[in-house]
Length: 262
Image 1: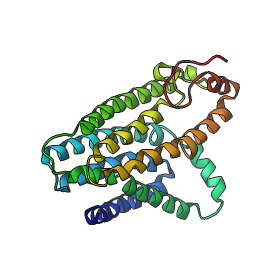
Image 2: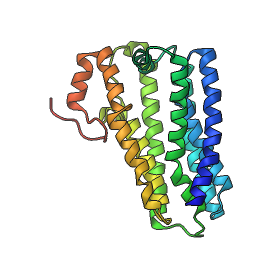
Image 3: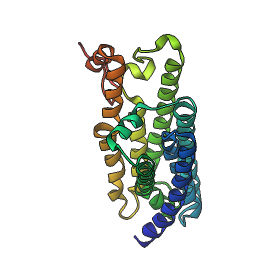
C-alpha cells in the first residue's frame, strides 16, 4: 500500500505539471478542448512512467508500457487532430462555460487539475501490474491482454469510421450509421470501457488488486451517466433532431447489438 501511495504522489506531480502546461496553451489558443487530448496522452505517459519505474517482472512491465503507450498516445493524438486542431469550438465546453458564468479561466484551471487527479486515481491498476514480481502470466492477465487487444482495435476502427463520416460535407446534419455505429450509438465509449476492464483483469491477480474494480466501474458510470453519453446525445438531438431520435429508438446505446424495431 505504501508503494501505491508514493508512486501515485509522484505520478500526480507529473500530471499536475502537464495540466498546468495545457492550461497555459488553452489561455493562448482559447481551445479548452485540448484537455481531451491531454487525458489520453497523460494516461500513456504515466503508464510508461510506472512501467519504467516499477520493481516487478521486467517483461510484464514492458508489456504494460507498450499497452498503455500505444492506447493512450493513439487516443490522445486522435483527439488532438480531430477535436483541437480540426475545430474552432466544442459545444460541450460552451455548455460548461454557460453554467460557470464568471471566472472562466480559473474554473478551467480547476477542471484541468480535476482531470489530473482522475488520471492518478484511475491508473492505480498500472502501479499494481508494474509491481507484480511473478515471472509467468496468470490466465487472467492473458485474458486481460486479449480484451485490451480487441478493445484498442475496436476503438480505433470506430473512431476512424466516425472521422471519415464527419469529413464528408455531404453528411452534415446526418447521423453516422457506418460500421460499428450501426450497432451501437457509442461504440468508441464501449471499447474505452473494455480497455479499463482489461487493466483490472491484469491487476486483479495481485494482492488487493480486486479493489481496482472501481476503475472500470467508475468509467462506466461516467460514460453512461455524466459526461459521456448524456452530453453527447443532448448535443446530437439539438443538432440533428428527429434523425437522432429515430437512431436512439433503433440502435443500442452502448453495447454493440442487433437493431431494434421502431
